[in-house]
Each structure stands twice: as C-alpha cells, then as structure tokens.
Image 1 (tube, rainbow, N blue to C red):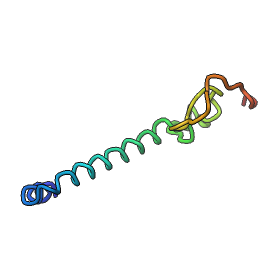
Image 2: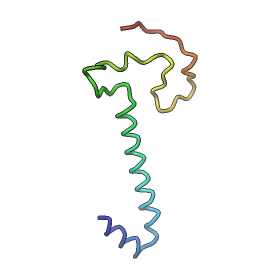
Image 3: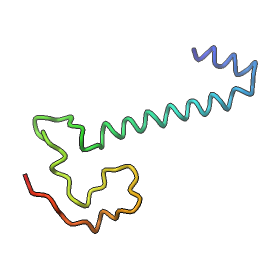
Image 4: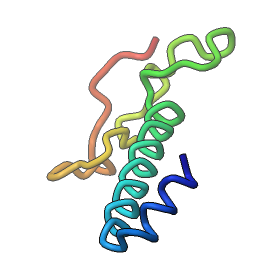
Length: 82
C-alpha cells in the first residue's frame, strides 16, 4: 500500500499535498480518540478501584474540549458528595 502511494506520488506530484493532508487528518482523528479514551470522565478503565470516576470530579475540573464562556476556576460546588 505504501509502495503504491509512493509510485503514484512520483508519477503525479500534485497528489503529494493530498497524501499529506490525508495523513494529518488521520493522525488528528486518532489523537482525539485517544484523548477521549484516556481523559474523559465517562470512561472507566479500572472498575475495581474507581467504579464511578465522574463522581470524583470537582466543580473546577474542565473536562470539555472547548469551554467558550465558562471560567471553571470560579465555579462553586452544587452537587452532593457520594
């Protein structure tokens, strides 16, 4: 597969940016998937020691990827402890 891409790039040099952007897009999608799998509070990898990781989040923890108008450092706790 890689050899075919290289031969096509040698024959048609205009395809090189296409292959570059395609590779970049695949890398970004993989990185975002890994970020969701490792840092999302809804995902529990260790059910024995931490069965409900979303209950251990404080009100100042930012778990969204982009927070437009929210300053998480100034929020107060508005939920009970479990």
